[in-house]
Image 1: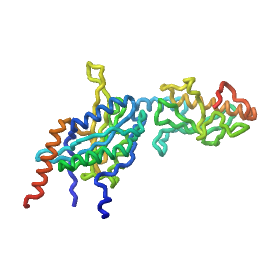
Image 2: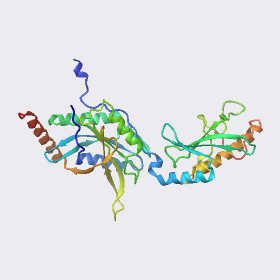
Image 3: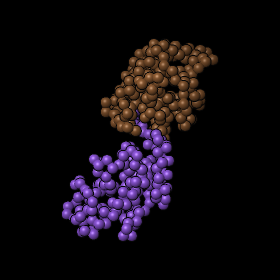
Length: 198
Length: 158
């Protein structure tokens, strides 16, 4: 019988993934944009989190409007397959783990249409969601106090087959190497625990 | 071997992420409701199957004819104006000669504005659009009476 894992405590973005989200959000101006997130669930002795090792942009053929956005699915598939192959060489299994997109200023939550789209992904067997969960972060533009320069804010939401109503998750950004090291260590740890006698 | 055909990664599907105007700006929705309730209390709000919000109701012309209409908010509201469809009677304002529509789009919604005139802006509510629709029906009846020859008021060819 499959046991359902507990909700992760947070999302950890590799710096490179965060940079892709940040750059694409700033470039999009008033239009919507987004992309996929590639990563995995990391379970350590004391904590469990979702690691995002790479993010994609919308792809060249994406349809980007003021309040709606449809990504270029071929470009996203290529981004997923490339990242998957690169991490496979490191012995780490990463997969599609969700999708980010931009909202206009002030709308830092999922819309009802976004939630329906999330549910459709969770119920689609073509998505290899090992733990039946996804994260759907919303990127918005804001300005820091005392500064006129725009900055990107990210608001991650968690959905799973058991938790169809989105829940806000904390997030943090790690250096690429630090996150990769943790993923490799966690992989070794899992291998040891699965091979140890019961 | 058959196993070779099994993809290693998820096979992504086309997705669309969208936010409705009334979720982005709930205060505007309250304003729209208040204006319609005040000016056209018999109209009712609906959510169409595709998720768009709409008002339906009936207008009566000076000549006593009744027109049931459906006003649909576009996804890009208020940047784009609502569209008004005559429901009952169904109206196809086709000119006497040829198949050209008279101030009506091929999908049936009425041509209420000439965009360059900037009659509609982001502050224009559905209540104003319904009032403009009533004027459209007045012009439509005059046009019918002229044997589909003369549309009262200014117009552009389209």
